[in-house]
Every structure is written in structure tokens, then in C-alpha cells.
Length: 287
Figure (tube, rainbow, N blue to C red):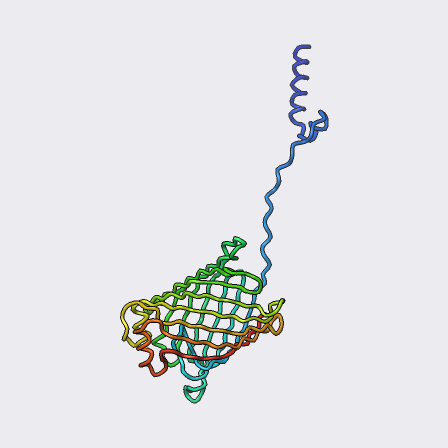
């Protein structure tokens, strides 16, 4: 009986010891309690802070990729909404020289959307941006010419940063999936800051456009076959940030066709020539 009672007490003490919590055993035996497992912290979502901008402009002629859309003065309106790299926008050219049913209208409009992301920043040449975009082109007088485009642009936003001089380059690949046209846009930009706070600057850009056979035939009324650099556009603008939200940008631009066949086709066009000079200004609000 005594043996049975002794075994009972031994088993009871063992069960009591096992039933004790880790903190109780640590306190009783003078040991530090084991660290509690940390609960995974759910990261906070970034605040929703969309940007909205409106851009009004006047141009002595409506140009696209160095070729004329309208050889008379036009006004432009651009509105864009963006958030966390995603953007949605509208652009329209208002032709003051043409009327439809005795009313002026936007003759050339574009609805576009896309997503831009910075994915490399070495600290030497700044972030590398990749931009995926979609554009729908609508023409009021020629709705059968409506078409859609897909674009992919890779940009080095800060290739040069010395004092007040900034430099950037980009390469864009575009494809019109309705007209089966493809073209490249190789661009370089040099910015000279005129003051310490960066409110006034001179921005010079150079665009070189290369197109495939379908693109060249569409631009030249099927007079040019093969691939070619069909346009080079040099533009200089004075960018003045009047306030934190208002910007005024007058500019002067020159375009020419590097390829001889494209130059000859431009000379034969009623709206284009071997070299074109035009000017304008843009006035933008950033909200």
C-alpha cells in the first residue's frame, strides 16, 4: 500500500510539473522564459493620394512623330489621372480652321492608359523606368481610321547629373494592332536648371523615329517601301514653374526626315516638307 501511495505521489508531482507553464517553471527554477513567437505584422497599405493634371496648349500646327496632322493652328487639351504608377488620360487637338456642321470640334483625340514602374536605382544614373501603355486614336472626320496602339518604353531618367545639368535617354517600342504598323522612338533629353530651386529651366529633346514598311507606307501614301528613320524632331522649351501647381512652357521645334526617300515624299505632301519649324506653348495645372 505504501509503495502504491509513493508511486501515486511521484506520478502526481510529475504531472503537476508538466502542467506548469513555461513562465511558471522558469520562475520556480530561476530560468528565463523562452521568447514568445512574434506575430507577423501586416504591412500598412500606402495612402491613396491620386494626382490629377490638366494641360492646355496652343500650337502653330498639329504634329505627331514629326509629321503634320493639321497645318493650321490648333489648341490642345490633356487631362490625366494617376496613382501609384497607374495612369489614365485624354488628349485632344482642337482645330480652329475646320468646322463640322458649323461647329468646331476636337478633330484628333486620344484616350490612353498605362502603368509606369521604377525598378532599378543604382545611385549613379537614377531610376530605370519601364512604361506599358495603351492608346486609342479617334478621328472625328474619318472614324474609319480609328485605331489602337500598344507601347513599351524603357527610360534612364538620370543618365547625367552634374551641377545644374540633367540628362536622360529612353527607347520606346510601339505597335498599332489595327493597322499592323510598328515603330521605334529613340529620345534624349538635356535639362539645364536656371536657378537653385529648379523653378526655371531649359529643356532640349531630340527624338529619332524609325518605322517598318507599313508605317512608312501609311505616312507617305504608299510611296516608300522598306524600313527607315522617317523623322527627327529637335525641340527646346523654357519650363517655368510659376507656383507649385502651375507651369508655363513655351517651345520651338524643328523636324526633318533623315531618310532621303521620306524627305522626297514629304516634299510632295501638301502639308509636309523636307524641314518644318513650328512653335507653341503649354500651360499646366497639377492637383
